[in-house]
Image 1: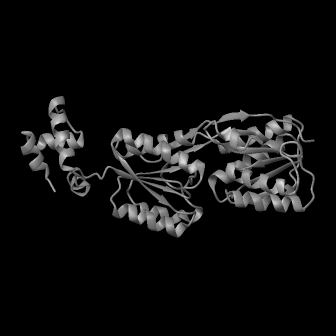
Image 2: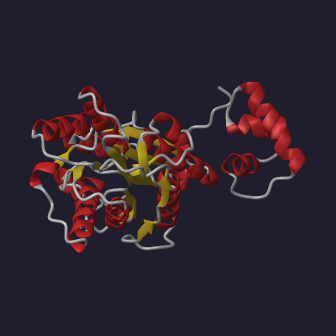
Image 3: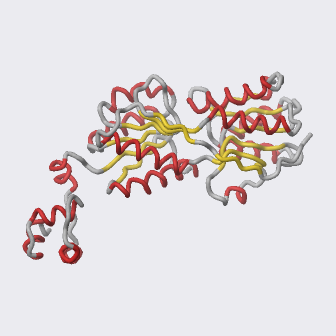
Length: 334
């Protein structure tokens, strides 16, 4: 394999000039840069990132740790991260925990061994107490879920406010018997979404019916099982508030299996929907949802992380993003 020294000799420049070109760390004349590029492409040169990291004391990689990679939400977050890190000449390593705390622990240790410059982490449940011990001094930004007692920066949305807004809309349209199927309270996001929904009911002097309240995983399977259990009680309800888009999908499957219609028999709402316009074509039965800024969340997490890596800010920065609102047709099912 050709070396940087050999590339420099062929291009008629110094090794430091080739190094500046490769690392984008200084000025190189346009014609010189084009000559170096042609030689690199001719020899299929691949620089050693290990050697580069030893010299620069940076690997120019970050780790992105997600619970799932088959969810549109997490895919959108990853897209936001990827688009932003390119601006900083960084690469990312994606790790998939499947909500398994032990897998998360192993992946964080692997990222340490790979000497990543930083980590963006969407943590598993509260068992992530081990994170403090495993991350060490690596700059880390939590995303979507966070814990107040951990000294890391975090990017998230207004979970309580988003839930309260949807419940208030249902109440304004005459709904009082509302099924609440929201995520686990062990997650910060789940806890806050429950708080917002219950606060909206309390302010409207509506006593929540325990038979219409189910805590479940943030998955379609969780939503399906929870809705089946509520339907089995034969308790009257006219609307459903689901904790996320996956829960709402599971709820609708259970409702359809009972021969009921959405939204004619039961109005379906969700805490979040996709940023992309295709959402209304996939699940048009969801009459209203908050528009989750998932791509922006990924991008903002990178911006904060890069500032921490470069020593421009201290850990512990928090950023709460606003959510849009999509109302397709809030038809009554009373």
